[in-house]
Image 1 (cartoon, rainbow, N blue to C red):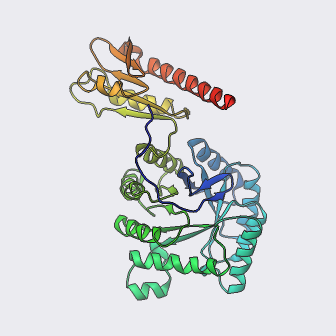
Image 2: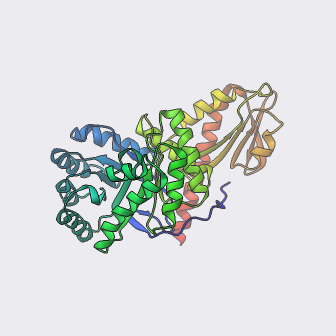
Image 3: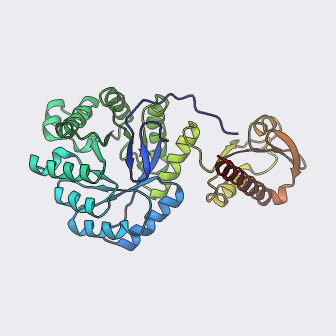
Length: 370
């Protein structure tokens, strides 16, 4: 049973990254970034497809050279998900990928040289209706700001961001979004909160260089969760030293936990204890692996005992309350039948897939009648 989030989101201007709206009343989108050699077109395309299958709404690709720009063009022709080109310093690369079908340019205007070059990129972006992402990072602040502040600070991040915003304002270009990332949670959240009061454009959230899969997930959940609870954020990337697919999974789990997006199975599962009447951990591991391909939103409770089981099961689309010798299944809050431990995972998978298919058909019927 899905419930609306009580979060009141910050009002922002809506822009479009390809087919994906960002800001305004659009859902918060999930991004990731390839880590393949962009010039290896086949490997990059394969990774992008994996990211899209995992639920990535937008994928960023590093384009450091003109050779990589040409490879980007070949990649663009083979995938459908919106692509952002990550570019630093060389404005010619931005102009080239714009002609090759990029959906967004990640480029800081102040880093690409003389005004003539900035104007060329902005004019090209305007002509082709391509948004720009200003991306400020605590690890690469301008030298004068490092000298002014002595070290990266929230004020330094925001000043850097506003410096780049000013370049775009000079040319009356408002089709952009901004990020002010830092590896320190307190610095990043303070910077985003300050920036949110100074511009109307969408904000791209991230705790940069957050760490490995476990530590980076925790840091990102704490930092981005705090901002999202404040209503701040229009798109996000979970930055992990791990398979980029894991970034997408964590991003979705974060949004689902805050009821900001719904996709796939939302499991409510107990941590297991001596009261459990079946192996909850093993059951959950198998179910999560088997059901990764299900995209229909469903709440499924898997509780190992009768203490908390019935209460949680009644609030889910499908609920399991562990008992002895069999386990009660609830459908839409009502007791329905019982399952044996021997075939528990197979039976649960069958029930969840059937319910997802039925729900998908109902949604198709509603759309057809609308």
